[in-house]
Amino acid sequence: MAKVSMVQRELRRKRIVAKYAAKRAALTAISKDTNLPNEERFKARMSLAQLPRDGSKTRLKHRCEVTGRPRGYYRKLKMSRIALRELGSQGKIPGLVKSSW
Image (cartoon, rainbow, N blue to C red):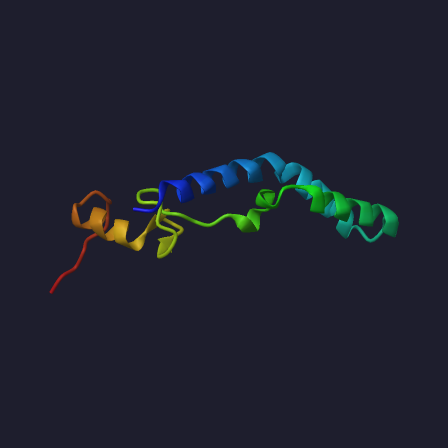
């Protein structure tokens, strides 16, 4: 089980990313538009730098929804390999059969 503080930090980051997503996308579009004057693009880039760092989508880390573990994460199932194996052994994941020989 992951530290509760790390899981809470990740949830806080998700909220901040959602809050600033539209503003960040608009400023990024302005800064990449080559038809605009350089001063306006620079202003957009500077205001983008003033936004919180945790508002960037790249700061998010996938975590297991069962245990909060950050490593060994399966995106399709949104859980770690350890949680997947445990739940699969208990028969709680439909279509998954743990093989043993």
